[in-house]
Image 1 (cartoon, chains in turn purple, green):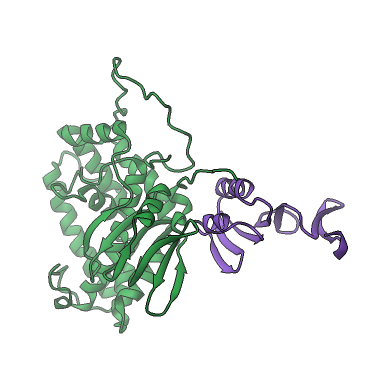
Image 2 (spheres, chains in turn blue, brown):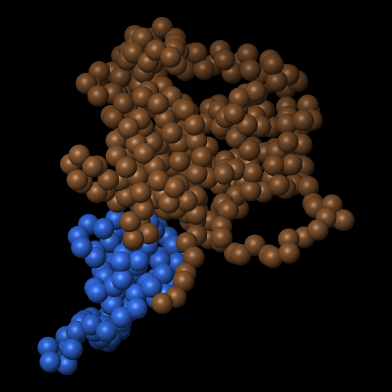
Length: 97
Length: 306
């Protein structure tokens, strides 16, 4: 069991409702919970199937060097960037969006 | 647009319980919500992440909400004011005929039943019961030990204790300690029933307890009652707070968390039944297998998944 955070942007209400079946929506589009790896993967499948043109980021606590890992779905100005094995985020210029 | 089915998650990955009083329970955008029509508030309930929902008087549940609870394998329990249970549904039991037959076989055969009861005794008191005793004799020993345990715990928390006395019809008639105990056992019975159903067994087929819809629930709950809810109830009763029920529920939730009860409870049920040393029956050779195989599920074996 590890804590997870899911942040959604411009996703259909169906996905938002679906996420609320297991997680708590603490702010608009921001979901938190404490789930096992299998459940996290199941939730990610739901994101893939239901997010359509929206974009989603999911972060979870792990014993990774940074203490957490994350993955993203869909296009966003913020992009994950592998920096010598450490995953950071880089920003695309605003007009590129 | 694609369709992705909802499935239950295992009991061990869930929170214990959520009580809901007042409000209209419905589904909005596929999520389980409680709407307070007076104040206009809406509350999301992560229904798939709890073992059971206890609905108090003053709630109304829509058909869609019951369906959602059932799909994600969450037990809905309608409780009365005092946590006295009225009715329950939402997670239908009896999903596994092999497990039901196994449980019934253990309960029907006197020597197997005695083995199961001895295992319950052993798990509960941490030592094997004296040998060559009947179920009736074991029940006597158990009763004496339980009375003693209540006294010791009451003394430890500085409570006046005159025995476990309560009248289900008159909640306020019993003393604070008994009221707290009733509220606490209601919580324990709720998650125990959810676990028994999730594991595919029947709540009514008991070994020490018989003849009640929840006989097996009482059997299993009794194993852990004195390490979880009884100390919690007595601790709250000793403080004599203005809203004992609420405090008791919080204390029970903590006790379940600390003792990792939801992780332990299904393995414990299996362990108790395994003491009979028989295998679950195989399907008869001439039985017709399901035409459409069951889909794989993340949930427990007794969860009905789609």
